[in-house]
Image (cartoon, rainbow, N blue to C red; front, side, top):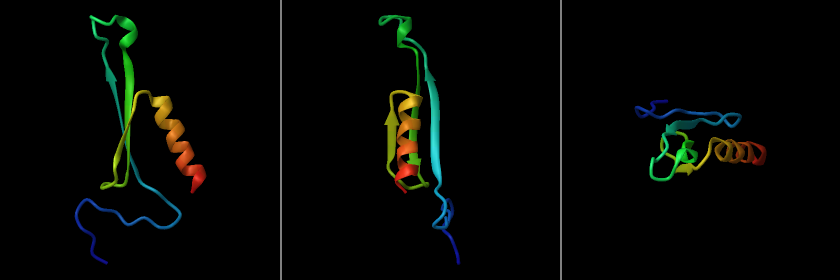
Amino acid sequence: MDDEPGTHVIGQDGRVYVLRVWYEPHDAALGPQTRHWRASLREGTHGERRHFATVDECIEHLYGELVRR
């Protein structure tokens, strides 16, 4: 079976997620409490990317996806 570059074949027992986590430094105009870790999550290499305001929200979403399947 030939795969296109950048794609992966995953069996029924597995999932591939692309997780991106980054740190947004605070905005001086808004104060130091505006510093946050942000996250985005995408299933596979071609799935829709979802953005999260916090890493905790991302983990909760991922946990829900895994429990549901």
